[in-house]
Amino acid sequence: MTFDPFATYSEQPLWRAEMTLPEVPPAEVEPREDVMVVGSGFSGLHTALHLARGGRKVVVLDAEEIGHGCSTRNGGQVSSEIKPDLEGLTARHGATKALAILRTGIEAHRHLRQFVAEEGIACNYSVCGHFVGAHREDRLKGLEAFGALQRKIGTEAEMVPADRVRDYIASPQFCGGLHLPDWASVHPGRLLAELVRLCLAEGVRFVPRCRASAIEDQGDHMSLMAGTRRVRADHLVMGTDGYTDSASRWMRRRIVSLASVVMATETMDKSLVSQLYPRASMVYDTRLNVTYHRPSPDGDRVVMGTVVPVDTNNLRACLPRARDNMLRVFPQLAEVPLAHVWSGWVGATFSHLPHVGVKGRMGYAIGYNGTGVAMTSYLGRALARKMLGQPGGETGVDGVELETRPFFHGQTWYRRPVLALHDIKDRMPSRGATIG
Ligand SMILES: Cc1cc2nc3c(=O)[nH]c(=O)nc-3n(C[C@H](O)[C@H](O)[C@H](O)COP(=O)(O)OP(=O)(O)OC[C@H]3O[C@@H](n4cnc5c(N)ncnc54)[C@H](O)[C@@H]3O)c2cc1C
Image 1: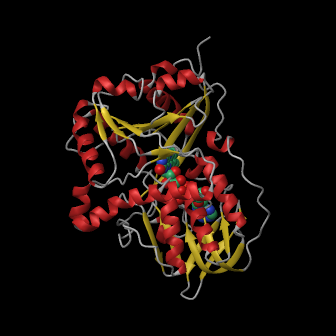
Image 2 (image 1 turned 90 degrees about the horizontal axis):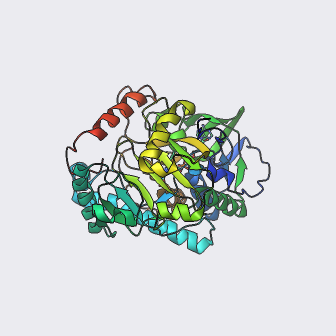
Image 3 (image 1 turned 120 degrees about the vertical axis):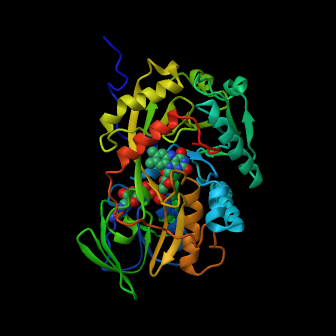
């Protein structure tokens, strides 16, 4: 019989299977509310927590289960990465603002580290370092430039020659790489459960399986539908990232959702996992259609995410290509079954930057472009401080316009051609000193 790695997998994300949510008392949305937070992921929870601590009465809505979105679907990689490079940011925003934007990533990671320590959060936070592997030799130049930029803004970064790649990863696919020793990892599900616990302790109410729609700023209040109930709220927070729907038409025109597929192997002998990842580093590569992976926090599985240029609304259709990507990294996993396979929507923006701001009576922390685990904590607190009128809510990304494009209304037809184009570019020589 031929081996089928997908014979018995579950579509529940590993992180959800391993997290224990506290008991959440049943609650209803009232016709009049103080602050409605839409989205129960990291953004919504961090914002809700700080608003509640600032004296506001907060209710968190989610169209699905609590934590349904990418906060329990991501790779758990904690970095200070901001996607655009210094040159591009300087051309658009000037040199001073460009550096401030890039340093936002460092502030965000520092904030998450401090938050986890001060609140005693059990989420397997570990400064394990990240290894970025070059999938082609011509990508090394881009990695060198990226490393130099990281050092300039205050993060350690060291090039790894081909003959030392095995110190970080037992994979045949990389011809060198970059090591970022300050970058870290978490168990995203455990982090989310702890945030829910902290919010409950501050009196935040949760209403899961209740979709917000028809969100409008009426000047002196926000109006919306919460399920079938019309609600008038003093303020509203959008924490919907890649799951942004048409509830707010303004926001739908500004967030582009891109899918990523994540696979977790069955449990394996821990010594085998540590042979694959000798330093337990987080790993990703220089592809536009990136593959990112790690040992699980318990050290007994490989967890690997990948972007594949096939029908991302159909998880089954993605599986063969996702599995090929996994074996390209680790041929050693050819006979290892997959226990969990899931997908999630990454929220991207036209600026490639995360955004935080207050527009009338609506606050938002959104558009993390795939690096939101640390940034959500920082922008969530910043947003709450802005809404409370407290000092310390300023960030390096303040004032950057959350842009749209003519004719963009949240359409999704572009996904397959864009990913297919990225696939072609990944096979071609690099056009400059960029990572991808
Ligand atoms: C597969 C994948 C891998 C990733 N890996 C990493 C990584 O390794 N490191 C990293 O830093 N970042 C990573 N990210 C990005 C990171 O997970 C996100 O940036 C972060 O979790 C965003 O959190 P959030 O709270 O803003 O949004 P989410 O956690 O997505 O929450 C949004 C919520 O809004 C709800 N919602 C949407 N519309 C409505 C509505 N109308 N009414 C009510 N509720 C609504 C959704 O149901 C959802 O629960 C990854 C993302 C994905 C998808």
